[in-house]
Image 1 (cartoon, one colour):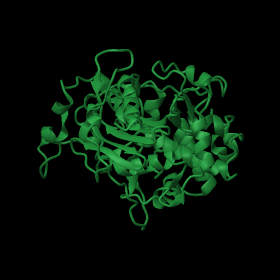
Image 2 (image 1 turned 30 degrees about the vertical axis):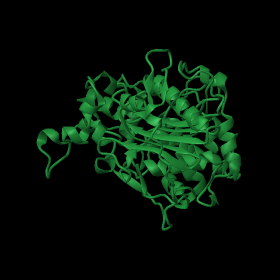
Image 3 (image 1 turned 180 degrees about the horizontal axis):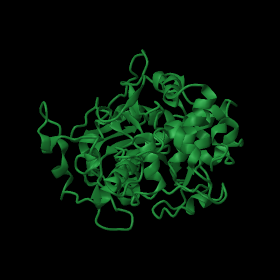
Length: 435
């Protein structure tokens, strides 16, 4: 029981291996949650119920229902859209995009955009070109008004907020974390700079190995309440109780290593600077100003602290609005939501040399900056990424934004980057060609 619970809660963060080990059906259609009848009926038959307490919510194919119903399974807090009117997303749908073809990275048979969407177990996808919806598609239980968990796409929202505070002079990126969060003075974060935390170049004794039930990521997951705690669990039950226990290993600033705890510190910095919970700041500074259609929500721990590393739940069109705002240099809904200088700074990226040390073979020449992934390709593309296929992909040259929700049984992006990245590029080229 202890091993199963630890693996399940570790899975709910960003890079899960337990789901990968499970046998996937022969086709995405076979795992359609509507077809399989999950949670249908009142009450659903016992064999069709999906529960948090036993971890079944994160087993495949049940997770194809769960990812769209996190608010019914776990405690969340609202991210209010405010009282304003909804900002329009005009439509200019194109019938040719399903047939756009590309060759996967590493070779192999050509695939179409439609085939790629199914291959990654797509739940919903939307393409904006010059601010207009040119493609929109929903599978399974998803629809325009249905929220879905964004996993690590969440990180980019809070990284952007932190950069806004830096631009305002309220947060010093060169200062030590302990200056703002004295509670972390004795931890591995204490002598790291704000910039090193934002860019994940911290040296920490923290393992994000999801195949190991005793890894640090599993312990952290239990602390934030991202899964059912095993019997007798007596460890931390809140993020801010866990973070001071993370020790240092090596030196800060020597290279990029993806660790979700960094983003939890980013959230804590936002809270310390503003005196407000991070999701409240997200609502006030971004969500309520953009004319979103719906409130969003975010998973919270037992102390009500939002899971800034991966707990955001939102609708597809609202995620597209955020992506379009970023593409437009921070301007949307008739307002400058994020300073243009902040967006320009993010787009500049971090050090490709630091990033290369992490060994992402399908992302040569990329970097990581302020919780965003920067491609440094000819189009200047950059994106927010979450496990199981969540993305905001922004191509400034093509004036394109692609947002996608998915529930792939393989969690890591490296499992399907070879399909997704050339698919995005092929769509960009088609849109630029005007064919």
